[in-house]
Amino acid sequence: MTLQTTLLTSHKGVDLHAASALLVMKDRLEDGHRLVNLFRCEMHTFWGDSVVGGMEKMLTEGRYYNPNKHHFGHFTTQGGSSPWFDWNDRHGDSVADFWPGEKQETDLEAGVLDGTELLTQLLGGIPSAGLTAVDVIAYSIDQEGPVLSGVVWRLIIDGDPATAQEAGLNLALARSRKMGLLVNPHMENWLVK
Image (cartoon, rainbow, N blue to C red; front, side, top):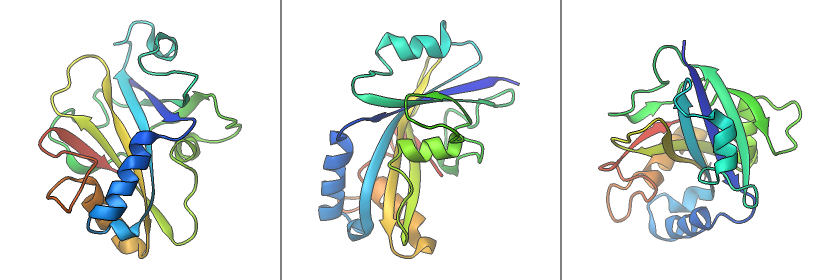
C-alpha cells in the first residue's frame, strides 16, 4: 500500500479569490440566489516518498504554505497501490469516503478533531441549519510531477438538501455565461464530496 499525503491550506484572513467569486456567482449565475457562502483550500497531494523531504519540505519551502497567511492541515491515508482517483478523466466522480485521510498535524487549535472535522474547520466550519455544504475538488488535466495540486471549493447552499449538490455543481462548473465559474471542464478534472 502506498501512503498518500495531503496538505490543505486555507487563508487566515479574507480569501479574496473566494470573496470575489461569491459576489459574481450570487449576482450573475443561475442558482446564485441559493449560494450563501464560498470557501476555498489549496490542495497538494503526493504518494509514497515521491517528494524529497516530504511534508516537512512542503511546510518550510514557502511554495505550498505561508504561515503568515495560511492555516494548514496535514493528512495521510493508505491509498492502496494507486492514488484515490485516476489522475486523468475524472469528471464529477465522488471522492473516496476516507479522503482527505487521518489528521497528522495542523496549526489550528484542533485538539481531538479527526480528519473530517479538520477539513470542515479549514473550509469555514459547520454550516448552519438549513444549509448544505457541497465540496468540489478541481485540478488541472495532465498535471505532471510528483505533487498533484488543486483547489477544494466548499459551496454553502441554501434550501432543499436533496437539490443542493445539483445547485452547487451548476454554480461550480462553467457551462455557459449563466452557469458555473469555479471549474473549467475543458482544462480541469473535478471530484465531488
